Image (cartoon, rainbow, N blue to C red):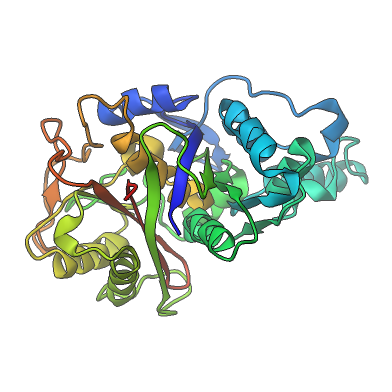
Length: 398
């Protein structure tokens, strides 16, 4: 069954809606990546934060109040009309919610614990529900009064890519007629200090696949799709296939040969009934760590011996962790969208100094355009701790 991606709500360091994000993404604009102090002791680090005040959680749902849910609310409001139409068409019990996150409301929990250690009590606005991993789905279900399946997947940096695959299964099984799916993750001290302790965070803008790469930048985002069984009359874009693998090589390091990444990409192609040469663009996981970029370049060069246009978008958006899979699938969606009249692709932003130890890849430049002569199919990779790998294929609906 075709899983149509009918609508997209989006907020990240690149912009507060899909039009702002698309404009900055295709321009290779890295201005959303700003150096900030205060996240990690004695370090100032580049982070891709959403700037400005966020929409307040409705008063009747104050127990759901967290920055994570505020980001999710902003993304949802962008597609509220599409959601209301789906409710009218299918009913509230036939619409599911599947989201990915790694932070949920853990930042609010950190502030609450600090208050408890200082004053012997939690602040009045602290609620344990804020930090539960299920919090984003619970919030959306309560706010929209939906009674279909609602749950959260948390598999680190593949979380929201898996959420899209899971949403498609709900449609295939006939359990839902539409699913709100995507991911949300928030900048917080716990995450930044954790990656800093792993010596994985760069003090400069990240530099994927460069010989000079030295670590990741963290960002925050919410990306929410309305996936359904029906095209919505506009240019139909669909999730054509998805593949997942778990090589379980190491708790934090990827399997160096790229075996698990290759397996996930091959499964996605098989699911979509496509050959490698039919992929017009590949959004790489591309974290700019030594090990990830090495193994991913090996996997890509093996699967695409004739080459494929590719880029890492993390110098612009940061690595948004549990939201990264949905966010970068959204970047593919924006490349396919009807209002992308120039058929632009996200450029690869780096210092241009290739690592001679890695296979050469075909980097997207500002001059490259998406081929319009055949059905367009784009791939997006997400790889996570524990050897958890997911590849998605987004394209023109058949």
